[in-house]
Length: 185
Image (cartoon, rainbow, N blue to C red; front, side, top):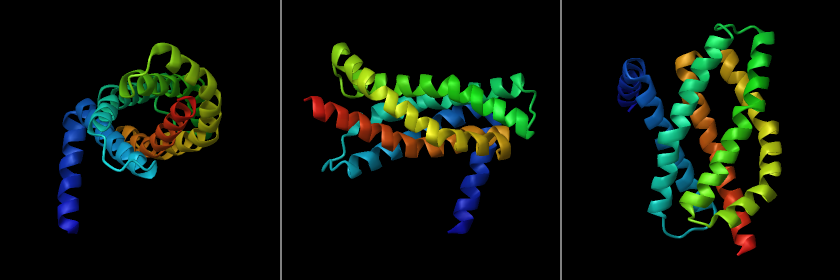
């Protein structure tokens, strides 16, 4: 079994080197799909909602992976690849004040409008109500993840690490979004 895992990892690394954007996009899509399947199971859905799962995978593939790829490349350019504590603190602060609020807002809007097909007015009111608590929770959780990512992960693995942790975070957001809609219905 470990030979199969080693070979799969070797092939993944080759793809990551040869086609980094595509590999990160596919990885983010697969992990987003896994997190949605888990969120559906946890929330008590009896039969897997395939449309929802595919739309969440699309979000990871088309937005999550590419956004992370270009964000980390940009951060490496801005901070010249430095990893000292002061620079990592600046990276974490910049990320938490820009991409964190943006990504949480985008996900909540996408989930309400596209995944659930809710009207704009309902989604807007749900986001207005729930966004502050989601973002405050994010600021308790993501700075630690961001620190580990910038301090210890090589650039090519940052999106993989972040996507893996984001799959856990997405379960929280999925459940939060679902709870908010259920309460309003």
